[in-house]
Image 1 (cartoon, rainbow, N blue to C red):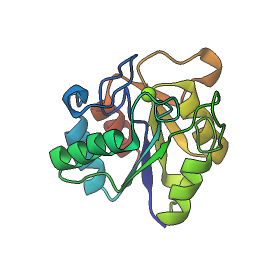
Image 2 (image 1 turned 90 degrees about the vertical axis):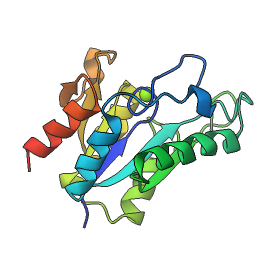
Image 3 (image 1 turned 180 degrees about the horizontal axis):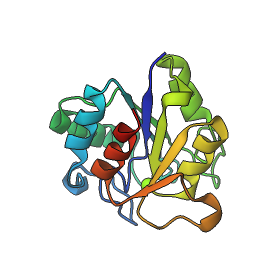
Image 4 (image 1 turned 30 degrees about the vertical axis):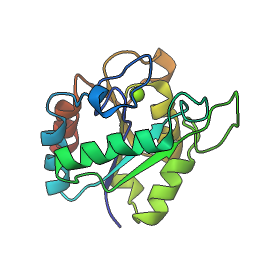
Length: 171
Ligand SMILES: [Mg+2]
């Protein structure tokens, strides 16, 4: 069984954009992110992105545009991410357990990467990132302070590098 760090995408690995991020030109990798991921990888964590991309269901951008952003990130980071799970759904079009706070993206990764839940973490910046992880018994870290009190994570950090250090301080 493998320890895994689940990662939200927008606001965690790239700068969040209220108008959606779907062009490579607008895909701004946050400071320290690549170093943080390499550090976790070097400590044997699988790295899996779980991201809601409802702009696809809403017709705002295509799956191909999203994939180009993911390809770009992989090139920049030396292919550090093991897999990007994405949910293209939006409740106004089709609801799905794949959409966070649903747990299905996590469950797929747990099966595929033989994840040891007790040694795994979720890092996100919204309540909907924290809720499914908590339901599955995965420890949580929130980036920033945008999360409502009731959904607060186990730990809080300013950025991904700080989050990686929280994780590594416990092993
Ligand atoms: Mg986010």
